[in-house]
Image 1 (tube, protein in one colour):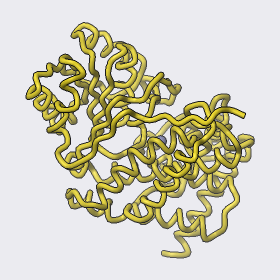
Image 2 (tube, helix red, strand yellow; image 1 turned 90 degrees about the horizontal axis):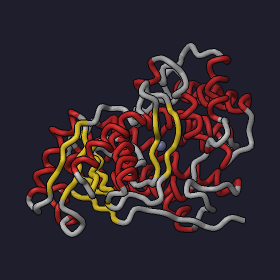
Image 3 (cartoon, protein in one colour; image 1 turned 60 degrees about the vertical axis):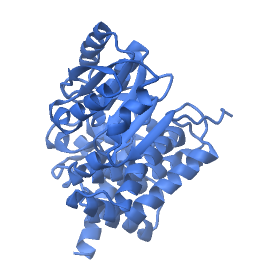
Image 4 (tube, rainbow, N blue to C red; image 1 turned 45 degrees about the vertical axis):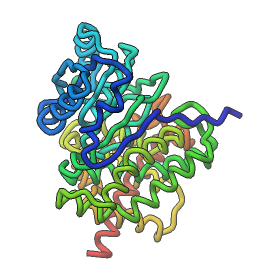
Length: 368
Ligand SMILES: [Zn+2]
């Protein structure tokens, strides 16, 4: 029997215009930061971060991220950051910028600050990064010995992000309880290498409850680009609840199937992480035994948020059994998270993918 393990970031801050206060949280930590953002994010939030730090006499080395969380990019920026003598690494932006920033902070053994500009996935709070090849194919997870020191979300900045990013985050967060539940039932291990605690289970369950309750209103708020109580609830669910929930709760089939999809060429690469996870989650549900009512509750929720539910929706309308077997084989390789919750063959995973597609098509036919 392995130990119960729960890990989390040291501090989480969320609120309207929270970036303006970032210097308050760092003034006693250090005086030289490296701030990493891509071209778009520099205009949206990067300069605001640098200005707020300057007000507290904290200097920033400004770095332009090239867009891919690859080993090459991690090496390149680490060198620049070391040269600047940074003791604080501030990553500003989306998943890949933040994953890269964590790796750089690890290389420098620096204080890690994560400033997501969208609530689009649950990676920000975690002590791991997903590393991709320069071509964007999933390569590996990189684990760190601690979670980020500070996560800071400015709800105003997030309200201005494309609504599709928010629904992608909702889809990623929807996988949290479904995967943690599979890990708990199977007796598998969580992403921290232990058994799931009561705390992580409660957080993962609360995550799903919050999404069903406020997901739609938050989506509408994002369309109107306004900060509302519903949006605040979903920012927390997508980021904090889903982040703690997946890491200390555990990942299972949904994310392994997502990773399998990244092995395919073609238009599927234009989908967000969360959008692919949405379909992976339906495939995991199809792998398990659920009633029609349960399946329809999930499918209906995704459709109402304009999330993909069929193979056609994820640009794989003409996928052959052979193509899907490739995805399934990739989903069950050694070390994949599917083994935390399931004892399955590639053939069974492929069946579940086609089943999920068919269940969603039947739903669309029934309620059109
Ligand atoms: Zn995810």
